[in-house]
Length: 338
Ligand SMILES: [Zn+2]
Image 1 (cartoon, rainbow, N blue to C red):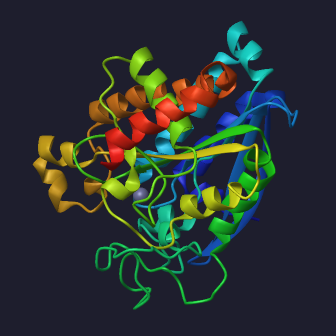
Image 2: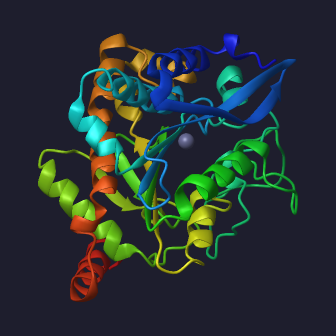
């Protein structure tokens, strides 16, 4: 029997799933051994079961230490489940979209309070993709030791079980559709909230740059006051082994499908700045420790996740075709790559 009792995030998730009743499906996609315990990695789905509808996946807790990422995804699922009780429009929306959740990808790391999984592997450096240009020393991924941060895992070894589970879920639920988005929630980089898209392994633009740019356009127009910086990860740093680069590249082998993986990087340094005592706590460097700040963080990002679910549902209305694609491509190149 898995020991989810030891992890507040998993207890809360199980409570939400129970609350959601027949509207939700939950499965255990893998189990992780950690210090004599065994944690389940849950995937939860709701909405249309038809393979013809678009889908969106919400991922969190890939880096165990960044608990706020898992909490944002769980808060979003909780809000949806409560709305299922009264919101007719949500029920209408769910007829034409599939929602997929994997809020705690790395429960072993969450339990231990580490970025890496219990094997010491950084799941965001572990995929079989090598950067094609110079990466920052250590931060870009290293194979020296599992005892040091950003460890990629042994050369030639299979991906870690948690990553295999993400890949399988993306394969089953997202990639085969004409349109899908993934949002993976992290924290810890800089003072501003960022929405990153691939690539991390090269500074070259992705094939679906026009679609990304069109998504940014409708977000800017709909939420004029938003404070996110929308950019390719390569604008900040390059890295080996990025899981979303790997999944995106695999998705690109299928024609006529659009799969857009996004990473939400919540800028945690502002929480440290406003509460300098957090500087002395490792947990505090990645999470808002003060209750009201935590509430504000959760509230703010629910707007983004709701937007992404709506944009996925309505992709046919904004996705560029023909000449519009060319225009978006050129604007995106000018905005991000020149
Ligand atoms: Zn992270």
